Length: 449
Image (cartoon, rainbow, N blue to C red; front, side):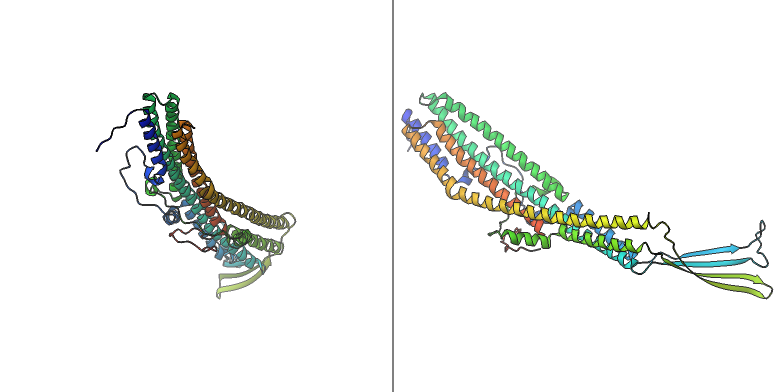
């Protein structure tokens, strides 16, 4: 059976039905873009996929690993004395015919070896091993940093897509309301300003969708660059991991960061290397010994005469004040710099952990406030405005603005979730351990390396 409704009262009823249905429909049911759907359906992209791609393809990680291998290759040579020198000569040969002098001409072989002062090779090896340890810790720091950059882009892309869906849903509501406002204006019950204002709000939502999608594309570009992959390979819909249920105490987080952050461990190794350099420089003021063997042969009336010699010598540091002492002052200054850098990194780490702890706590409190108070009240105000409009106590735009306020709060809630996830990602880098469950489960507050 078909029932036709005409007249001003029918237009009011249609308006109330459309706006009320838009309010009561599930939020996900309206989040469809009016444009044509994309032809390719991509597999979802998880944070575990992002981490695996970064570990495999990041040029920064490969460069840091190569630098660590280079540092490790220098350790054996630093613990060895200088290479011996071998000389061969013809002594006391006549010129220009190059004949050996009957009494003095001979052939000579000489082998010389420098023996560094005891403790020099040990200090040199300790410095090289500490530099290698620092380089290896920096590989871990670079890996964590590359993962954090990719994860932040991943989370930002997720937030941009969610906010774009909310903007599309708002646009769909405004289109329905604008159609009703146009119908009421044509029958003389509505106002032209309502039609124009609804069209302006639709255009603003179009701008919001374009802006959010541009932000998502920019985040995708950063994500692909972090893994050194084409953008298409990382274009799957992002799936945000579950965030930890509880936030550890600030003192606990600071303690974990100081104890486990690879950058701080690298700083400690740099201090050890500089300290070994000071010990080495202090021994450079003392002479190094030299030992040599010499063998000579010459022909004589009774056959070949063979002679041997043993030589012992030492270097003479005559420029110790301007050379060795200056090197020692340099090494002391380098150790002080390494110690100051380590103190600065620890202070920065403590401060940043404190900032992130505050950011996570405030984001959680605000999110709870939005879910339990702000959004329910805004939804109630939007529903009440529909009833008031039917009674003629509010105008048409009050209904639209109240509903747009609800969607604005929903976008702010998404922004809070993004801010909290990004704070957890950076906290992972500072602590040097995993805090986000990339496999869909929830981690304990202590996390895992």
